[in-house]
Length: 203
Image (tube, rainbow, N blue to C red; front, side):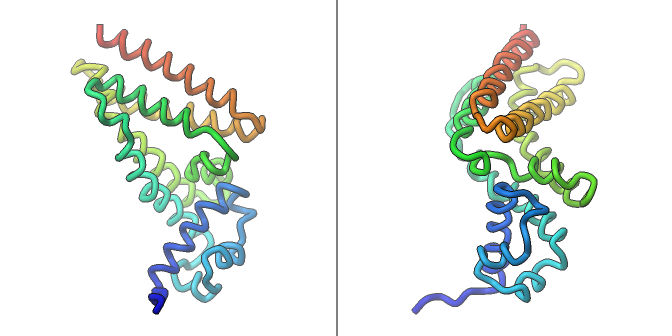
């Protein structure tokens, strides 16, 4: 006998549907009806879990962090013994992920922030939090490479955020051009920059 669906299952399905639909067509174009159809729930089910579509958007940005964190935490680049190699391995992974349709590899948080930063500032703040949370996963390795000098923690944070800025820009270019080559090349340029900065600091 099949296990009965629970309210928490419905919430999870709605969030998962948001990850797919918002990356594919944008927040404004994604309707509650579409979310409910993909999540196999009703509008009543939607409003049981979310007071509004904006509330769903905020939760989706947070869900993005929860969903992607285990993937990156288990990635092979963490096995490298050298901190710089781990950072470069992370960038190799991000470049390798740029393939297929843009909705398959672009960032939900970045997509939300681009679209709703004026119309839905609460969603934009949640998206910002998701991007910053991910950037923090690089800071320890960057701080190690940059060394114990004054301001290294602040420099590591700034550099980790710069990495995210370039990645988000690469995603935008991929969407605009309908071609992934420039986006991949941008990540390669970023790798060169990181090597120059980090090796220079280490000397």
